[in-house]
Length: 226
Image 1 (cartoon, rainbow, N blue to C red):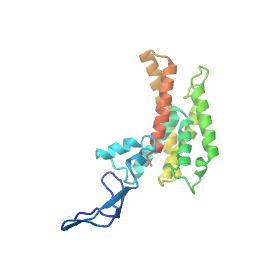
Image 2: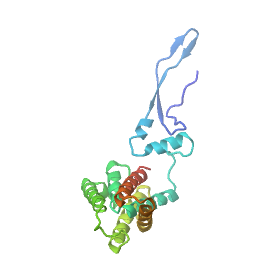
Image 3: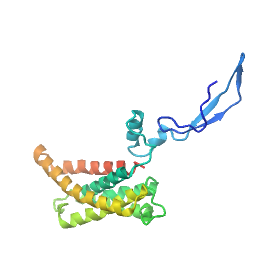
Image 4: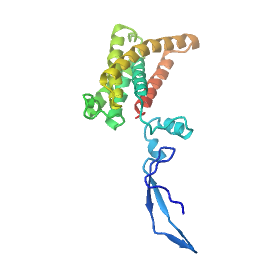
């Protein structure tokens, strides 16, 4: 008679709780029937945006999302959320605020706990929407202008600190990397967008919408790694 272990964890990172039922006797043999309840099912993994990526990476053996993040990986995420801020300065803190509000980023008991408040979510969301709208206007200053760079530096630092603190790192490391990513993302995004406009000969508005989608999608992907 083979019985699964109580509270085991499969190779997919799905923890299972086993409940044993009365034995069933058939002929001279007794068979134990057990009901297995998965507390971390595949459906639960799909509740977060882009978690299906981690799920399929785990299925193929490329990654195991049950493993704790290394400091290096956290620093990469902090720099990456800064790049998102370089593309759209207020999108990064907006997704960080939503992540903290939803519990994806654990900022409770830290100086950044305010990011999870309803007020912070509302303010950053409205500001992000305004930025996405004004970005399409011809009169909007370049992101590489001093005002644009300062905004991306600050928002990148705030977002990077949130990502770092959520993983147990000190705010300074995440803030520095986020700020650096904000500056790098500003220049890289500017060169990418202007270059594609000239190469593809398409309206800037079209690529601006594409950049919006990339910034929002990348931001959600980063903050859902926890």
